[in-house]
Length: 533
Image 1: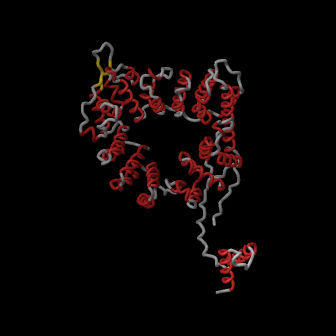
Image 2: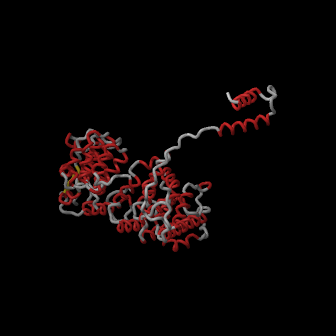
Image 3: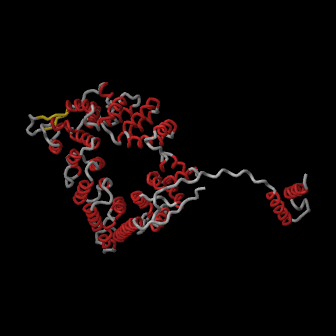
């Protein structure tokens, strides 16, 4: 035993027994001696083997951000988690809600993420799943490289982010990833192959279809929605016999979106026997005779036999038949009438809500603008008395089948006629930035709501949409609304000040969005790079 080890043992013994029982040293001297011996012991340790350095970061050929845009990104990432005190938002823009828009603008211009921003960007994507596709695309291959070094960012390694998918034309690499990859990677791979070669994607799916789990078959089948065509019919017909009820239902839904399919023909034949025109009535009237049973052939074609709680069997079966039948079969059934004329016909025996709701679902499935327009009716018509549906969710889906300009015009007229209280879902399907007539209608409606003396948080959802969706050029006409105005006698106490604050925040947000555009269009900065080895 060395002298150093003997001295260390003596120090340990003294520390355990106490300096009063081992008067070798005072407490201070004991600590000093322990410090000296600790330093000696550490100095005598041999270094362990060095860890292998990480692989060099891959090259990202995209251009670097302009310097002003880089600083803006740093500010958005730093402010994304800030919360207003006591729940009051104040007049400052909500940076967390502007980050997705900034990422979309950067993606349009093809910029790459600054290396120094990658950790904060991955943290933001970890906290918000809705942000992940844009954030990971912006982070690119270097974001995936960095994510491998931190377990908290492992989500970035799933789903083929950052260009980690093989080229769809590389058959061997595609086959290997399809057979060995994570589920999310396989879903992304199937989508990439289908975008380039739909037949190759179907062939790839067929190689493992029978051995896939039911929930995986469902997700793979759902990926066929993109680029759905008559060439998919044979595969989908076979899926109608799948052992999973959900897979069968999805196959039936996809087939119903192919009006020329044999499935659509079968459903049309069934639906036409249930719905017709009574010409003997004083005015032409739609008559409905719902199915009396759900036979085996109907069940094979995806008709669910058991209705949800509170629904009658016959109305449940009828709705499924009508929504799956091609809409092109109805004009002939109703004497050559147009969709608008058919929807305007009275329906006997209170079947109108069920029939029109099924036509709404069919219009959305088949992406039929003419039927969607007919079922929406005039925007000035009160929602409860419209020709097709009073459901705002269904109206929003119907609107999404119209082209962006017509959609914006319809919603603008709806807001002008009915105000904002029922417009939130409809505004959410309009293209961003909102077209000028729609933006003007929303601003006018907000001004009317302020004059009515109500509190602005009654319209907080619409105000939040306006901050993200109004054109930045709307800031100037809004400036006058941001000034505090005298409160009317019948107004809610303090409402005027709150409205002024809300409009100030809206103007500040639009100004910030305008600067974001200008900064991203500025001169490019010198590219900076992570060390590559």
